[in-house]
Image (cartoon, rainbow, N blue to C red; front, side, top):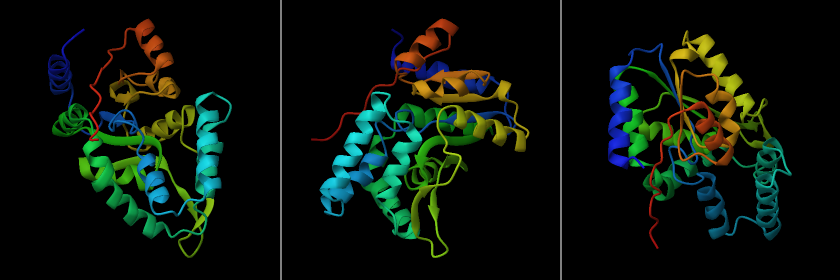
Length: 245
């Protein structure tokens, strides 16, 4: 196995040696790619600690998460169920909470090596985009911290008073729909997919990996790893971050 330091150096050197400028896109998934684990767990844990989540909510989210992992629930139903528990909440207050939880719980979980890869693309003047199925309250604080200007992610549906309706704006960004969102972004910004990069860990991201010129699986799950091996895509194996006790 290639040592992590050498792998990182080779990745950065490859970016530096390639074309520069804004017509090169660099798209990054969030959970499991830029951040070790799931950013949404910080919000869920905070609701439990503050006793804002009922037992029914906790059990409902756990059940939905397990069913999703087992392939028995679509991602759209999972994220809509989670949004339903927040019906009536102020989006502005949730945004503030997202910033606080990022500082307290998420910032330390950003992979240092992936941050260096983001910075390598930024030095080349590439159009760097965080493209994730996460919600804005989880994705945008990470993007701001890393200096990523563009974010393609899921958004809460809100009413005229800025309160959550309990639903998600359609279409829900996940898997093939993430690929569609990136294609549309590239079309609107004159960015050829053939010159673009995509970093992700999830099996559902194979669709977008197949579209870009530089697919880069990061700690890939089983299906993505198998596809990467079959297509000879370079794989980045990033060391997990040790959590404090």
